[in-house]
Image 1 (tube, rainbow, N blue to C red):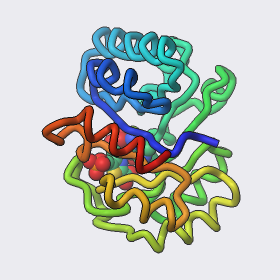
Image 2 (image 1 turned 30 degrees about the vertical axis):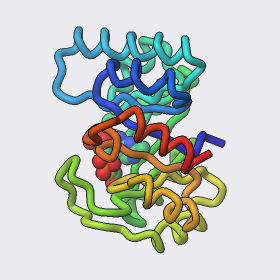
Image 3 (image 1 turned 180 degrees about the horizontal axis):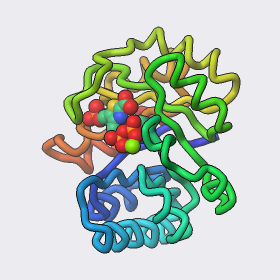
Length: 197
Ligand SMILES: Cc1ncc(COP(=O)(O)OP(=O)(O)O)c(N)n1
Ligand SMILES: Cc1nc(C(=O)O)sc1CCOP(=O)(O)O
Ligand SMILES: [Mg+2]
């Protein structure tokens, strides 16, 4: 089973702030960086997480996840199209997969993922998406359809909404802007840890 709290950050500097507070499962979601810089940032994140006994999930960059000896990878449906799943599994990577509708869930289940993410449960301001808001009822449905695969709720989560997502069936709650746009991110992470303990 994965930890219940799963923040996502776009720079290892965030890990320097979050890991000492007790975050144990975290994603680096880095877009639009040159390959060399990306490699440096991921390696830095890997070393920071190892030093704190935390698990780091790499978003998107499956070749670098293999090259840098990561344990976890997250792929969306489009990422799955081009990823070499044999190589990913051969490297021992655990795999999380995004889903937004039943066709995507069916596709995700074929790769025997280590978690499935459903989103956006609430509207998100982080990125433009085809889906507006899935609602917590869909988490309950997904929990049943996931047949034992851990379920991650993502999209518009906040400290206040996290208990609703967990009560509806999510095993884990994932979050970006409720932390990164907060005036006091460290204090907000503390509230998240308390709400998901
Ligand atoms: C935990 C988690 N869930 C969903 C996503 C989204 O992945 P994807 O659909 O590939 O979109 P991008 O994040 O790559 O823009 C995620 N990263 N993490
Ligand atoms: C990266 C991502 N993926 C989503 C999905 O539904 O697949 S929602 C999302 C953004 C999550 O950010 P916030 O917590 O700020 O809403
Ligand atoms: Mg992706």
